[in-house]
Length: 378
Image 1 (tube, one colour):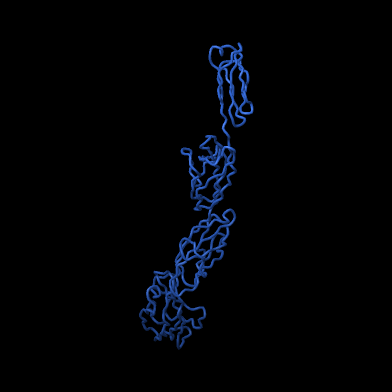
Image 2: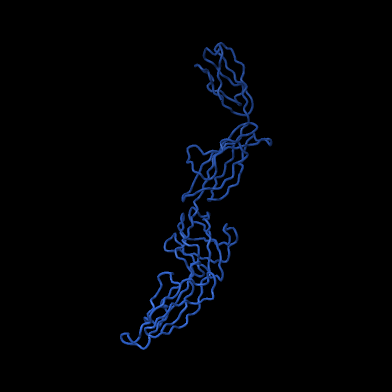
């Protein structure tokens, strides 16, 4: 604070300023020779002292009573390191000082520290109201880099009105981002490169849950994970189920995201369609075979809607009997009709043509294919 001498005696110089108790407050400069005649008062300790001005004629001013209240200091505020979506509840920093009697209430304001990046980490500034503590907030970091905000906290004693400040930092780490090309899985099947990880470099520490929040104890594993064709690609293998099952997966990241969980994805594991064994087909050369619709005891997603067919890998009979393979897509709702080739017209002629065939059922709702069933055409 400053002190200014005025009046007729102050129209001459120099003016001398004095403090009766320099342990309470001091003046600097003690002598002023230029108008306006001012001095700076510096508080040194709690209590009261009189400040006076003396003119060149020896006349002394009435005293100005300066009261110095007891101060305090804010204790260090621990930095916060959080994950995106993590909640920090409201909290009250602590303070130390003689001014803090049991009747004293300390209130707070907080703002972005001067000269630091204005990164939004979830805690909004409060420079308007004096509050009993710092607001709770939910950490924010939409990117892939560590996000930092430095905060200055101001505290004020409601008794002395003295203030103190302290800085602390909030660090919000990036969380890995989990994306899936298909969350409908098939019992016992592996979906290659099904997951893509962003914000982390390795596939590790997977957690499988039965609820979307990912908060309950992990279930017996129905999903397993392995590194795919690239470091951030993941193969997902579904366990064998006898009825449709729902499972949720969450992942902890690596590196700077070591304790930040990714988003949670829901996977559905569907049972496979089934079909009955094919009856052998016996034809004469040149005969027309009508389209064949395999039978099934399945219902709903266990009943086939489409088929593929071709030679099984274990086939012993590979003759061309007239039926072309269909392994390109799932567009055929039955096995195509065909005209049987005549073995007598082969070169050299044959008495019989035989072909082993494997038919694979598919359900368009579940997106799953079942076990192939074999048959013979001759």
